[in-house]
Length: 94
Image (cartoon, rainbow, N blue to C red; front, side):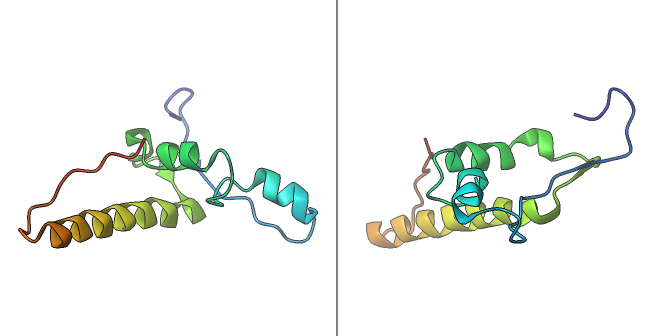
């Protein structure tokens, strides 16, 4: 990404509603909302290995990378606690 033609950086930014969109239009575009039909695809892209590059600046998208990782870690930790043996199971999101 961004290597052809030679670029200095690729910047990602989430859409923000600065009251220039109706609530309905913003809801249609806001893939960061867990209720959005494309939210899971958004999370898949955010976790993509292609975004781990010195050219990529995730901007206000970056927190979504960490939130998903933290959620997954908490889920795995709760599984280990529920099992009572401290063993963590791998959980794959579909």
